[in-house]
Length: 96
Image (cartoon, rainbow, N blue to C red; front, side, top):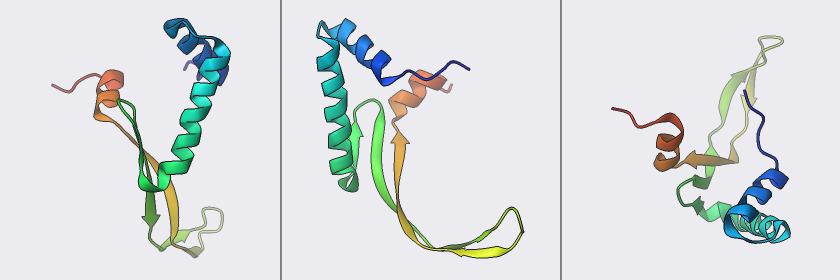
């Protein structure tokens, strides 16, 4: 499996394709991340890629894998990323 792209590699690719400096590309990436953090509770969508959503997870009974003992897991909020259909189709290919 290939290694994941680093922030620097992503910035370099964006800078190349859009005739901007690498520093400007890094600033754009950081601004997108900041916006995502700020607006995730209302859901944050990156068109063609996916959406960050805040989900309430219910309390449930779990099991400690080491001892087999049942434990109570508390309810909590979690952030989920829902991949857009366009991204799924581009990566996995369109189902026939």
